[in-house]
Image 1 (cartoon, rainbow, N blue to C red):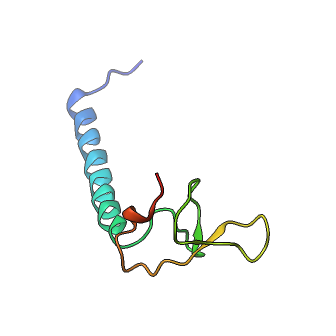
Image 2 (image 1 turned 90 degrees about the vertical axis):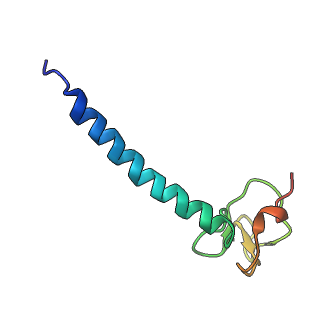
Length: 79
């Protein structure tokens, strides 16, 4: 079995952390502009109530998100 080079291992961990850090910063930024539970079809994927949910056109589909993406949606989520 080949030994692991600690320096190379740490370098890879640092790179992965850098990638995920950028992703998390972008996700935090988007959370203030767009609901995190709204998919690309403007459907709500949340498993909880939200005042921006509208009944789906077809029974059994996901709720339609009627939010305008101009608000901080975090206050709309029911707790």
